[in-house]
Amino acid sequence: MPTADRNAPGDDEALKKRLETLTKALDGKRQETEETARASEKSSNGGIGKAMGTGFRVASELAAAILVGGLLGWQIDRWAGTDPWFLLLFLLLGIVAGFWNVYKLAARPTGAGEPPQQ
Image (cartoon, rainbow, N blue to C red):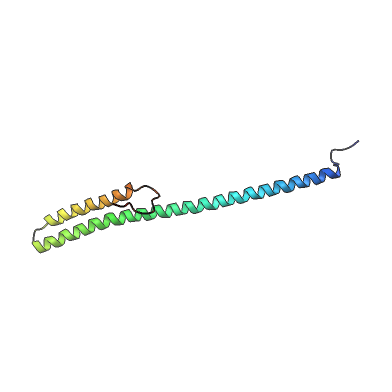
């Protein structure tokens, strides 16, 4: 009686060819998966860095506008002797300018490489 364990010599060759074909296909898929993983890792790290840069820019522009407005008002008050009116006026102008800058940054389309031309 023939057993299922014994294969004809031609069957072994066919199985080896199929195994080689499947191995090559799996290696190709594995490389594609690794390349995709590397690309997504790079893009996610770049996205986080870009978002952090934008956040720092927003914070610094807001703080700088308020600080400059306050300092200008304080200096004008010292020269003119009109405590605290110019300080309050320029502080408010600095706050408005800071929020306007933040609004302009937030209104920009995402992924824009260059600032919009006015």
